[in-house]
Length: 140
Image (cartoon, rainbow, N blue to C red; front, side, top):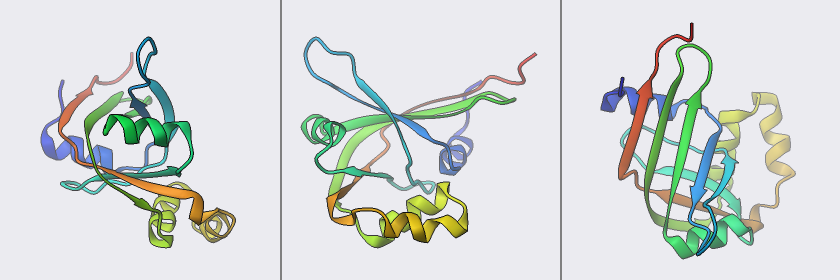
């Protein structure tokens, strides 16, 4: 059963590790990698990565990417969204702290942020354009 707009946006706003997919070029399957991300209903999807990474270069070239967030415990649910990159900027301390705080225990965020090379990171922002979602019910 597809999720309605409010359900899919609320689900995507939860702290799931997403699978990010981006076109990898002729003769190649898409690159698919796990990422931490940030999303608020009605807004852009943000994630950060090393600006020199293969993933960053592919996203810059393609100009768009997809992410898939899923829950594998009952009820199985997923949201997949694809859209254009609307901005890529050097990662700010606020970006790094906000995204890290979605995934790490509160007492670990500061150490993680301090140990990160902020100057090597870039934050990509994607405007959700195409959505797929489902709640497949309880697993029997």
